[in-house]
Amino acid sequence: MSTFDDRERAYEAKFAHDADLRFKAEARRNRLLGEWAAGLLGKEGEDIRSYAMTVVTADFQSPGDEDVFRKIADDLSGKSDEATIRAKMAELLDTARRQVIEETE
Image 1 (cartoon, rainbow, N blue to C red):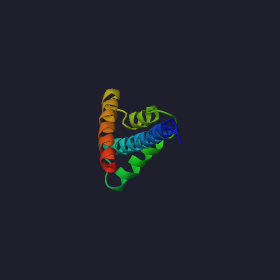
Image 2: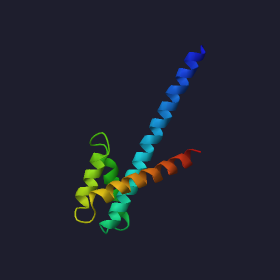
Image 3: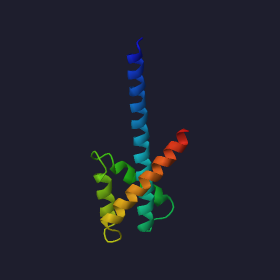
């Protein structure tokens, strides 16, 4: 086995690990975003969790974050504006990344 092959395997493993962490962080962000939006919608108890899961599954409609944004924006029509939702998405992605990294350490 050559050093080149070892290095290639290491890069592939790192890429796979990073992709897994990114997926987990985005899913966590979507759950947290759903919980935040559920609060604005006046949901309580199990309804918060159920609504958050609809936000998580909305992310599977198309690549990127726009499907999640559209769902939240439509649901929060009149309760929040685009800038606030996008800022919350960015804030919660940072929070989710920290949480996922802490869990893997």
